[in-house]
Image (cartoon, rainbow, N blue to C red; front, side, top):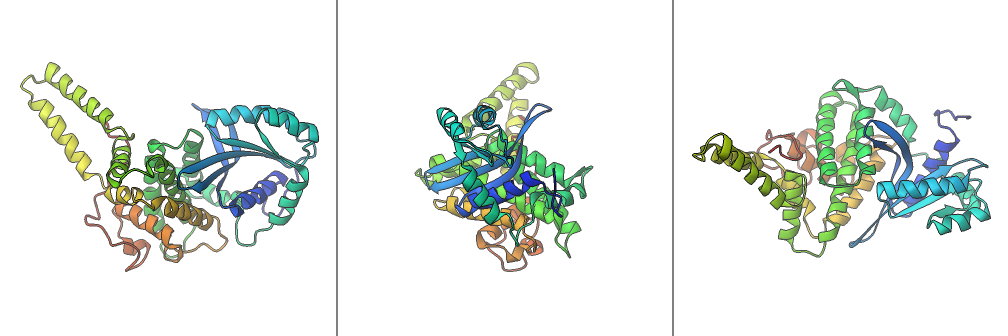
Length: 368
């Protein structure tokens, strides 16, 4: 297939154009989300579209794009319906240059939407030349050429995107927080003078953190602050929002220690004390407080859009040049990672620095 000067084929051009179209409608959009089962690669989602239509509503749409006259719309409709179910999307759209009238009726039976060939062509013509944005293929080449901890930045980004197809939960959020902090420290050490591909990946992962926090807070948007705070605190410490589950695991560990190791109860007490100390030292409070604010959802969504846009901008902005919402996220992740905000944002930036700058600990579910 013919490629342009950036090495992008017709399919990639169409994906970039339709991504820009959905972005213009106010959505957060990602290209090329991989779908795997175990070590097996199943497929990838051309576009993953996240829409925040109201404080109470989040909508996820997957889009399958074929920039061909013979797009096999019938086969794609059946395949896409299965993919929609597998990844838990609310909606699915086929965008094909060769869609026929009969394809609409068949797709409608499957509750799949079809973008007409006329609209498809108009979108590609209008949005295919974005002078401010680099295509994913160009940025990914930079990521593939940049190593980080015996891997590449591209592999880190690919693993982060893989979590999306499995469903956004606290395990995904914690994964992205850790990735963001790792990339933040690499960018600080290696791109202090000139921002580059690691900084782009850092922005991208921060965008995923923001989207996950918005999504995970949607069900408690009308709850009081304490309930929202406990929801995020339990999720970020224990990997799930049910704190009672963690308590049951701890009780089980104590009972095993008492029955088989030390019947005096001293070992069990040591387990509980060590667990409570580990929890107290996890530096999640800044993130938890912000995520649980009553109006944080809209700010998180705007931050995600700004950070994703910055990750692919032709002119790579410094952290201090980003939107206020984006800088809040960068500041909170700096705090979590024990990095001085002045090293990332400069002095006097958004939100005061938290105490204890070197209190970084691995995030995720605590091993009980």
